[in-house]
Image (cartoon, rainbow, N blue to C red):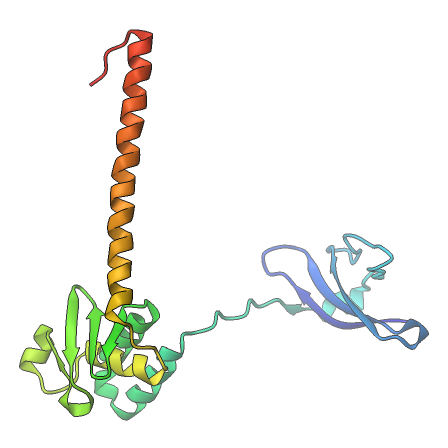
Length: 202
């Protein structure tokens, strides 16, 4: 006997998604099938012996809702902080965005570099933390960069060694010179083709 377990309807088409249970021979075998608007399965095989959906079954279909994408845990920390300090909501949100974007680099137990509109250096911890941004010069409250550093530490982000950062910069420079070298070679090949064809090039 085949029993319908779940039926949903795609909101952007006339198709239905069904979850069936086949309990033949005492083996509970579940399988999925896509059905057309008239209830017929799009493909019926030995592995997918879906019956035709009845009008009553079609009427029970629920709309298919795409699951929400997983949110970065930094936003949960931002929500908790906002509940305590509602006036800091914008800074908490911006801090979570910085963490999500990978713009927080922990350079030591009490130092960090956070890249917003530019790179800002943070020194100290707790209430003693100081940031090189303009907000840090004129406000005693923590800026979004300090909040982002705290979030990154709270989420267990590892401290990045200076060597690792240097390697990233070296790789970036190497990539640049490789690109220049390739462009030069392409120009030379193009010049040779023009010369062989008797066409002048710039």
